[in-house]
Every structure is written in structure tokens, then in C-alpha cells.
Length: 147
Length: 367
Image (cartoon, rainbow over all chains, first blue to last red):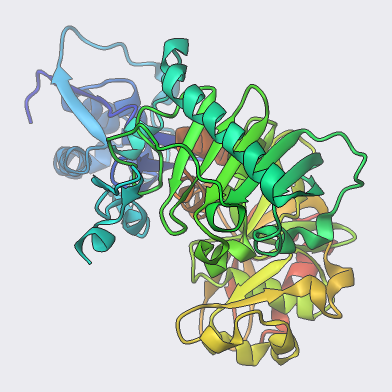
């Protein structure tokens, strides 16, 4: 992962909330929603601060030195998943983004982050939109038009 | 138009020109229809407000007001919102030809006709529209004919405009059932098929109070209050065997091969248990386990948020991030539980009653 890249939340397409260390993230474009717990929610908090992968890894290693090897692997993997799901956006790193100490992970056990994905809302959104209108000017469902 | 685009509402007043003209023309057409077919009026007490329904003729009267029969307001109460309802077939009047040549989203938002003031939605199933002027608190609902109203709309009519208007008045319409007792009530939430209706009807059948099985209104300011919205329940045909005492209230018994059973609960001997609302004590997320016994366990606020927010925000035109933030605030401030529903339905109301009896909704259940 390019060390000169930092990440941000893909707003306004994505909306999110973190409550009691658990993040719920919604992609308004696809209808998919996601859950991140524990270390995953801490990585999400670092994304909210526009940090680079390098800074995230350093931050987590500082807090969980015993898990350094796993952190090297899991942070890029999670960021890659979130990029693929269009939850975050990569942008050039122009100077170091300040890291607010209050969001540093609190002491505790390191948990391998896992992005839990829910797709049950897709059917409400992914049907073909209306493209045709009838003689009176009213939209027609595609199925109606072809009858 | 994506949901993200649809929820980005133009604030520029100049954008109001087209939707304003269409709204005004439709209001004139409604008045003409009301003059031609006669006018019927109903007033409802919903969410602490008075909603006035003006029907042009009687064709839509039963389809769109029967589900509110338990929430009638005195005829002299000053309305906060007026909804004008009409159809083309029975009144002989038609709405103006719409000027839009673009498309409506799958949720019905008409591109270019949704601003901070004017709301315009094409109702795909009915082939009509819902318009709303947020400055004047007036809405206009039109369908080609009464027979175009889908059966499920009879069970939860005017949901789009009520969702919009309540959202502007410190209320949130949510996709949830609600049951309770004199101590307060709980929201029962989850996507369709998660067990909301079965849980709510099991509680109703056990004598608990009932505020809805699909959509209810929640007050956004503490102390949290849940308001009833519809008197109906919708049940899959293969679940009806659990509620034999409700079968005589089914509105569509001939069509249960393709439709859920639509039940008007106010028309039977359970009517006294239908309440206008109660204090909100907890959010309950049902999980059908297939095991015999029912148990409650503490849920994280995020689990309640994930269960309640998406199914609420994606189900409504112009729903979006604002709903998510409101539901998140609700999840932060109201305790949440997973209800592992067993096959012995009698245990479900027992579990919820225990929840309400212990510390106003914060029982010492296992975490």
C-alpha cells in the first residue's frame, strides 16, 4: 500500500456511527451496511482522522506490540476491503495529518479486524429505475412498457 | 438517480419553480375533483398531532382511512397537516400532465422535483403520486383509481407523507412493531421476516397493549415515547395457525397464496388493547431460533442501530443519513436486547413483561 496515501470516509455516500466501540457503516449508494468491532472500529476511527496506512500501523503497534506481525497484514487487508466496498477513499498524503491522542486505541486485547457485511437492503435499491413515460407523461415500469 | 443523489436536496429557492407549479396545479385539480364528487373529511390524532384527511369523493375513503380507525381526533381540533386524497376514475378529474421527462428512482423520488420545500414521489405500485409542501403543511395524494391501491397500502396508508412530515416535527417513523403495558413499551425491530409481527401478535394475544406490527412513530426528544400508527397486522399465511382467534379479522382471506394476511385488529375483541402509545423502555431485536424456550440477552446499541436504521431509511423516499443519525441517538439512549424467540410463543410476552417490570426496561438478563 502506497505510504504516500491517506484515507478518508467516502462522504456523503457513506454515513456511519460508532457507539460503545462498535461502528455501523452504511453505503447509501448500494444499500449495503457493515459492522466493525474492537480493533476494526479503532481502525475506522483512524480513517475518520484521514490517517495513512503507515500511521495506522504505527499507532496500533504502539498499543499492541505483541501483535505487530499481524497488524502489518490486517490493516492493509481491511483498508483494501473498505476501498472495494467504496466506504473509504484514498487520496494523496500532503504532509502528516495530526493524530488526535483521544482516539488512540485503549489498552486491551488486539482482535483481528473483520468487516461484517449485510446485503439485505440491496433489493430495495438495485432494481432498474424507471426510464420511460406513457402518453400522459407518467413513468412506466419497464415490465409495463414491454407488455 | 441514486439514493445519495436523491437525498441531496437542492436548497436554492429557484429550484422550487417546477415542483411548485406542479403542486399548485394538482391542488387546483383536487379542489375541482372535490367539488365534482363531494368531500369527506377525517381527523386523526397521530404522534401527538392532528392530521386532517380531505377525500374527494368516497372511493378512497375505506382504503386509506380504515387503518387509522382507532386514532380518530375530534372534528374541531385544529389540523397540523392536511392531506388531500383523490382518484381520477371516480371523480372524473385528472392531474396535470407532469413535465418531468427524466425518471423516478426505485423509491419514487422524481428528479428535479424534490427541494427543501417541495417533496415529489411517484408511487410505483399504485401508479400515482404523493406531493408535499413543507411550508404550508399540505400534501396531495393521487391514484388513477381506488382499485390501484395495493392491499398492503390499505394496511399502512399514507406512510410516505407521514414519514416526511413527522420527520420535520421531532418525530421519526420507524420500521418496527411496538407492544407494552402500563409500565411502558418496547420497539421490536428487524428486517421483514425477522419475527416482528409474530412477536407483536404473541404479546397482543397474551393481553398486552399493542401499538403496531410494522411501522410506528417515535418521539425524538426525551422522554422517549412511542406512538401508534396503524391498527393492522400483516402475517404470512403459514404463521396464521398460531393465531386462530384472528382469522375472522383477515381482510383478504381469498388471496393468501400471494398476499400476507391483512388483519384489522380494531374490528375484533382485541380492540381495547390497541393504544395510542406508551413510554419507550427498550429496543428488542427478535431472532427466531427454532428452540423451545425464549430468552432475552443484552444487545449492543450498534446491534439495535443495524437492525432498525437500514430498514427504516431505505424504505422511504428521501430517507437517508438523517434517519441514520436519529436512530443512532435512539440506540444510544434506550437499552437494547436480543429476543431469542422460541417455538413456545407463550414465553415471548412473558419475557417482554419481565423486561418492562425490571427497572423500567433494564432487567438483569444475562449479557
